[in-house]
Length: 349
Image (cartoon, rainbow, N blue to C red; front, side):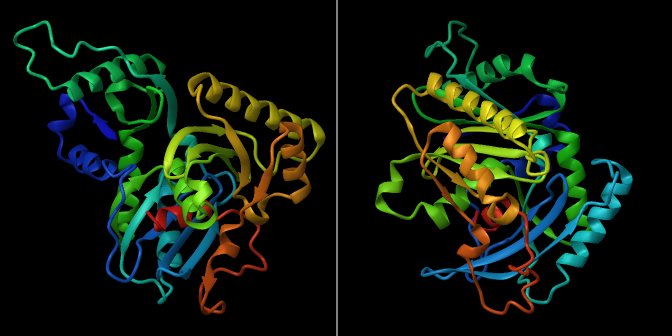
């Protein structure tokens, strides 16, 4: 169950109205065309990745993809960054194997605010006779009031979504409108049709469900997904398609160069598990799933699982798809040392 929180100023500004309509699909399934899924674009914090997949019912095929490293010392949000992003996306999508121009994109995880709260108490029957708001509207206002003091940016500049999960818990996701606007401008200038600005937790959940959660036992199992990027780790806890918990940790593969940093990441992951357990009394995490592919040494993953005392499995999304023509797909599996989980999950949305 998804709800949108907006203020009145948003309704008076056309560009923000357009952003809201696109941001509305943050957790929603976008109906793909008859033959192809949209192009998934993961802007990332250090590598730009684009990918388009096709699900034929029996397997998932990679139609086309590509990646480009961010230039050194480039600041996200700057005019230099915007020009580079437009040109880089244009270069990557110039591959003739891409089908259509529809895009589902995700802004960098570092630009997304995530919090977890209990469902606020509200009166089912408003005391004021002139209060004609629905129960959903009053719940929206209550959630906004609770999350407003926690936002790391001005509340009036926030686009906020929330999803009701389990056991009266709510997962709240917010981003600055001006940052969403920048991303929209990039895709428009790259001559792409943006279907939605999505978020990384939903994309990772999509990849897990499609590639590693296909058994009947997986439908009820609660798992912790770890996508270890170069400079961060994205954590998701879900029950199959149902997103329950998410957190961004600023420790990545480049920092995991010794036992101390591995221990530090384990402490952060343990805090995530403790926070989750305090919110969900009836749920227990059954296993870890590493979605990082070749981005992280297997010995590091084994050390993390051992210290957390949890069963774990490796989930390489790139190896899970079929590549019909490796020479022209744009992705070389032999040389790829980073995760495609977010980009693939976006294309499968």
